[in-house]
Length: 376
Ligand code: KG4
Ligand code: ZN
Image (cartoon, rainbow, N blue to C red; front, top):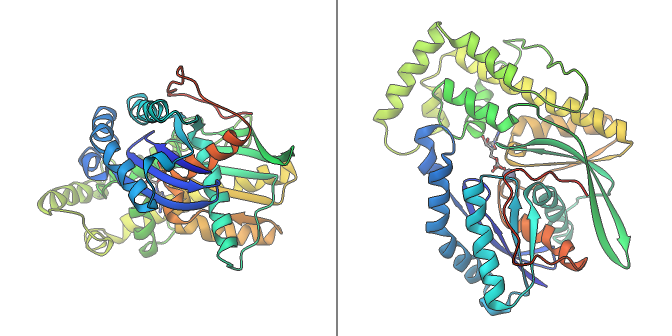
């Protein structure tokens, strides 16, 4: 079954063709980073307009790279939510119109379910390529960690009449900022650029992660919930009114004189050791918290598999720490490739495949939801 996936929930316009929920024939992502970087965050109205401009081209490109004609598509899967409502509507209405005009089945997919399937899709790809990778065994605890989400779920798979049916149980979520949002806000405060995650990841290699002890993040109530706004404020207090603030202002002025993107090395040359120590310590604190709560949730659920996905899953320290800690606990941890960690439509097509197999079909009333809890 050839599925055309469409994803437009935030600032990436994406389309992909995936065969049988497992084999990626194409995966096209048009990033809007250049549009939003001068604001240090996604501007919703600009994002919707960019999606409108690009959606046609991106879908055409996905079909061309898959070397198929539109008529060869068997079904469509579109992101239904959660996300920015204007952005979601562009991909959703486009997918709905295509499905109607082609008279092909359509399903709506939860963006978080897509991120979870990105890990399974990667696992299929690695196993099929004969790489020495274990098959991801479910049940698992999964951490979806990005600019918009930091959530833990238990994922189960069961065989229903020869078909795999997945179910998701929420275990915890952030009560304020998402982890990626905290990376982006700290980078903005320090005038390091946008998006902040990859920049802080690279700069942290040159700082001491033990230089600033932010302490452990304390949570009352559910121990599998997250909170990163306090950490972000702790960074702010260390910067405001100090030499670090003046240094950030100098960096902001320098960046305005440089056209195009700056490399991590150029940026590093404009950062004092104290700033590098601060970002490395911040990253260390975020990663330690993500790993600790995910491991605790996995132990509590009695599962031996952990899936990590979303933009922050690209973080190199997060990958290393998870691998180390999981090994010590005799658990297996799986990540998607970097390309499948961030927003993409292959994961939407993969998640949609199982819904289609289960007979799910979206009607003309399918609509977008800014808030859309995942539980089934
Ligand atoms: O999944 P994604 O592409 O979009 C959302 O659904 O939010 O994630 C984007 C987020 C941004 O906040 C970005 O700063 C963060 O992922 N990110 C990273 C890294 N690469 C991307 N955070 C930490 N380390 C990274 N290497
Ligand atoms: Zn996402």
